[in-house]
Amino acid sequence: MTDIIVIGGGPAGMTAALYGLRNGKSVLVLEKHGFGGQITYSPKVENWPGTAQMSGNEFADALLEQIMAQGADVDLAEALRIEDRGDRKIVYTDDGQAREAKAVIIAAGVKHRMLGLPGENELVGEGISFCAVCDGDFYSGKTVCVAGGGNSALQEAILLSGKCAKVIMLQDLPEFTGEKKLQEILFARPNVEKRTGVKITALNTAGSELTGVTVEPQAGGPAETVGCDGLFVAIGLIPENDAFRDLADLNAWGYFDSDERCETKTPGIFVAGDCRSKTVRQLTTASGDGATAALAACRYIDAM
Image (cartoon, rainbow, N blue to C red; front, side, top):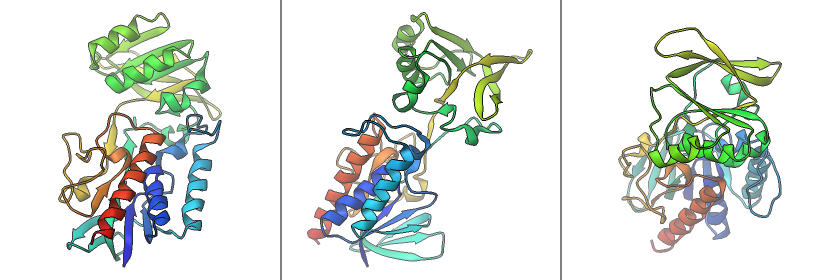
């Protein structure tokens, strides 16, 4: 039996593994896609304390190497459900295995809601971004579009408007849905243009570079090309927590309803990272959650 099973190999999950290992616990990390999570989409990370610059892949590779050197077991498998048997947790995976642990940390992360357009995946990190804090500096003095009209899109655009020559807001609804105060701040800036009732229907490229987007009015009418150097997509995040909702409460948006202690209603089940209800989702906060959840899991195991 493993002491701790971590579900998810992003920054939160791998940091949790590191802290569990450093506290003398055996750890297995299960990751269904690729280790690193969303950070691997960032070609340049400049907001990690103490490191001037690195790529998301470099960060992920270094962290994976670090936990494996500490003795972590890692496996590419998707956790389908968890069975709580008191002092034993059984994690069932898509490869037909049932793995036992004393405690489980769910760090399943989130995925960005995409536009669903041809070529979109290939442009992520190469013209399409999701995080102005992470990638905004790449577009200093350039023109960017922001897809979305809620609070997240407005906040991203406010930050971008301080760096970019022009920010073009593209909202498919008739009006922006974010807070009025954020709208007032953003649309008072002379380098911000807003377009409502338009849907992005195509991504335009020259070679491998994004050159603009095609938009069509929702009410009907001719398509139009909007030129830009980058596109920030802020149309929502999708947590992947439903498989574990019987063991950990979810809020109205599907995130784990857990506070900064990273605990759940089930003793021995902890949550960490972007899948948890929180106001800031950044590399630093994900790693902080991982440390918190791991130390809580270690205390739980030591008290058994």
